[in-house]
Amino acid sequence: MVESTAPRSQNGFLRKDYAYLFERFFYHLESVSADEMGLIAFDELDKTKSKILLEQMGEYFLHTQTGYQRSARIVPEPFFVHSDLTTAVQLADLVAYCASWAIRLNPMTKPAREELRPLANLAFGLRFVGTRFDEGDNREWPVYGMFYLDDLRPRSERTG
Image 1: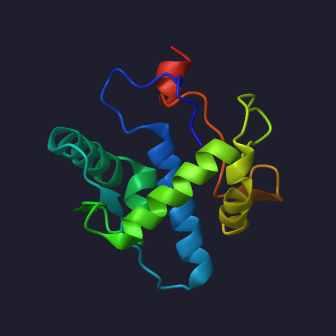
Image 2: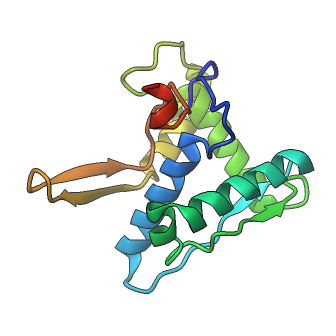
């Protein structure tokens, strides 16, 4: 879940929400089975933006260590579909709409639309919840498929 005023990268890097999406998708695939693979489908809105996203994903999956590792389970080139022609993408759009207007995670302060809360709660119940072991502190930590971001820039841009 992204704040509408969240700063975006000015250097053409993959947005942080996409990196988190690929991370959580990778964790989900790992939790399903040892050989599960995943495909990515995006709603194509504008060809120029789609081409930019393709380039950013290529950079991420081919030229970063983390992205390269995740490409073992996620096919690094997405399918672009038109939601007006693809029922499953229309459904995903509706779920995202309800979630963005009615789910409020801890740091979120904007008011929710109460009439959408029952549908949003159904979507929230479907979110990925997993765990990851951190060798640094020798503990297992929860990983949630729904989270809040108020800044979409990579760490290098946020810290200067």
